[in-house]
Length: 260
Image 1 (cartoon, rainbow, N blue to C red):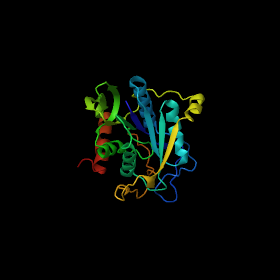
Image 2 (image 1 turned 30 degrees about the vertical axis):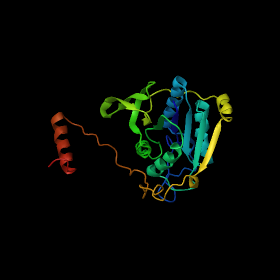
Image 3 (image 1 turned 90 degrees about the vertical axis):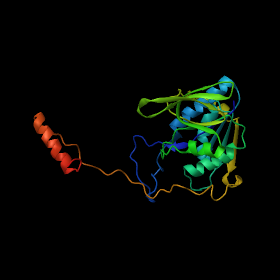
């Protein structure tokens, strides 16, 4: 069972004071630490578990600069067999372009399953998995929180829907699955595992080597501006007897245009 897992290195934005950069189109990342995207870590763990159960290979793929090889090394330390980094050479990226680049790489690899995270922590778009499946002509399922494979090249999966509801379905492979957090518990990566991972294959491909057309590399989503949410006034506490509180609530709702 040959598995490809697509991963991304993202800035840690939790519990930090974010600032908008001079372009007003991006968060200032100059002082932020970077880690593997959380959802991708679950996808990487699931890929390795599939290999451990069924045999085959795991190939980790990322699009990014030299520093982004950090997430590939982590995948190799977890148990992936080889890694591929695509050097974008400063080309603007969005979900559409990323899916096109990944598809160009993956088409040349013998695969049964492609795993992605449900979304990336930086832009939270969650579109690459579905776009990638369309490019590859493979089945797709998103928000997968349970995955069971059999020797007949089919996958039984649970998809998380809204309101705590799940959908169970079976897909014929090859397929692209977008993995939800909590599907497993990603393994601890030791220093020794990282050292051993240095001996595994790390391939770098430049964007101009993929022979993609201008249409393939044309962004479909352009960020016009990024801004911090406006500060609002604090909550107003309404006190009084139940009839008095009800009258005040009705008055407030009329003033806000909620009711007439």
